[in-house]
Length: 162
Image (cartoon, rainbow, N blue to C red; front, side, top):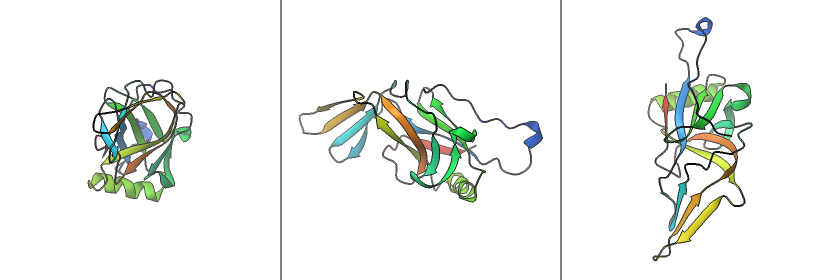
């Protein structure tokens, strides 16, 4: 389940003048509606991640390709804070991760997203007078990946180099 997350720390023995390749961001923001597709708007509830299976989450670019960090090996942390669902990833484990770190540092990539499933009763929705659908995710069943993305569903997400 989600919990507050803390920064990745490095041992004094591993400190060097080389970049740390650590990035931090929010893969979702709580209680802020965003357009998902024309006529459909989505909000993630503040408690949607409270009982989520986060047993092995991956960090990727655009939800695919090379795995650049992973919860299981300790190079990724996921959890929640006041803003939303967050992640801290050490991207030093592969060349693609180091390249992505540079793209984030340079401001080419500045948003995140997440791959998940919704629990059977984990979404509420209503239609407004203009025919727009407003959905509210109340319970994420499983979190599969958190990704740095070039085109996010929610513009409220963020990612930056540490």
